[in-house]
Amino acid sequence: MSRFTGSNNNGYCQDSEISWVHWDNLPASAEALREFTRHIIRLRAEQPLLRREN
Image 1 (cartoon, rainbow, N blue to C red):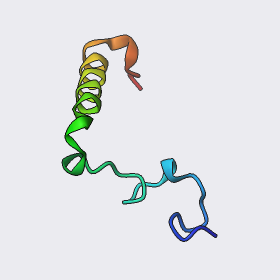
Image 2 (image 1 turned 180 degrees about the horizontal axis):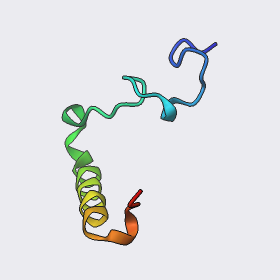
Image 3 (image 1 turned 180 degrees about the vertical axis):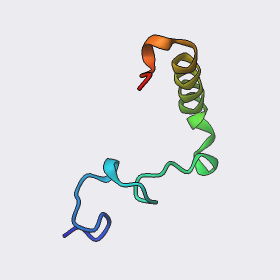
Image 4 (image 1 turned 90 degrees about the vertical axis):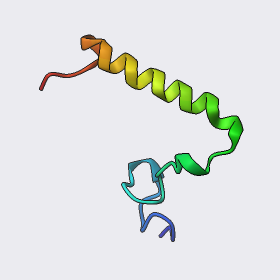
């Protein structure tokens, strides 16, 4: 049993501090990651083909 995920060894499926990204605490070099994330969010919002309607 993993002490971090409570028996689940896949941290990506956890909705808790285990998998949260703390955007305010990233180093300055992480600005590229922030910009990429903003771009992907904007792209998804602008392109209906990238969204499910139901």
